[in-house]
Length: 288
Image 1 (cartoon, rainbow, N blue to C red):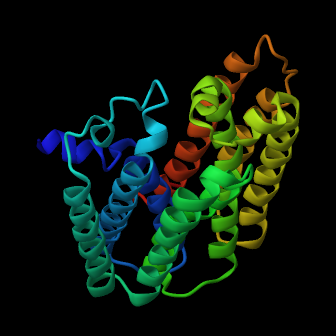
Image 2: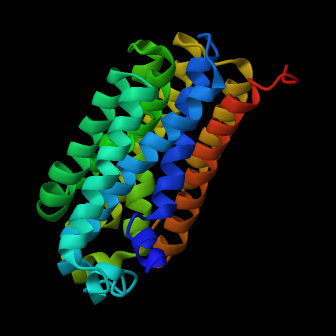
């Protein structure tokens, strides 16, 4: 039973968001005096709020999850957890996360994480995901909140670094999410989810993905040029951006789009882990 309750929090999504939250924390720590004891409640609070959002997502997506091969056996679909119990679980997680951030971090980080929660649960899960081809864009806003919260946990104010970091992760989400939709095209068709590759075709999705990766590379450079990011960050972000651009700009058609989309997806993971990693590495005592 514990495993079932853990699964509906989507641990993989939580871990991915905690990596980006840590990136925001690391970036802010480069220019602000901070005790790293602050990092634990920051990540714990973010994890709890995200877990709550994922539980609500599982509840509301039961009707479409049953139509998709990869989600048809989720706990909420097969009925191993009741809807009432899941709602209580989500509420408890949300309260615990909110209290943790408010009491142990700061009110601004708390407000921002709750705004991200609202975007994910109400605007994305309950509305745009099912009705709009650009629902992914709405989802990207909530997906970019964790690194912003990590940054605000340290600074308690919004500056150019915070804005650029938020935009960077918004842009990162788009080709990442479209790539998933492309190599899981049939699942999205079966569930009737109007993602861009399904509704508008591979060619249009490819054009959008190229534009987003270019924009990602530009903002990644701007974070160095206008903010506190170092030369090590510049080197790593330039390398992953170049490779992501190289793969994304390859020719795509009906015969190779699945393999191509998986490549774009994998490189997107490398990009976010590399950028987060180099920001953390620079804070180590032996880093140059």
